[in-house]
Image (cartoon, rainbow, N blue to C red; front, side, top):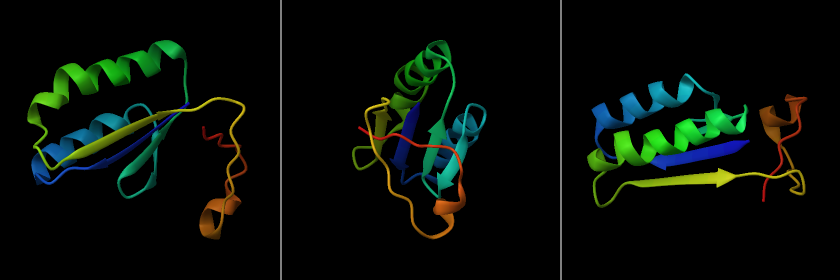
Length: 90
């Protein structure tokens, strides 16, 4: 699983990036997506970020890709605690 968090200043780039991520995962926060799938899908997502989007990112934009493993532990509060799937964070 991968968590992608981002802070993109340009509206059109941010919108395109969110639409791209929504094809592969679901939004867990306004600027954060959870992507669960095969290693192939995860590779496609990270490659597309590097090859397709990186040239549009401005100096102040931030994109963080967290690749998660089964040894991670997550605590959930608020609405997130109702999500019955385990999320594992490194």
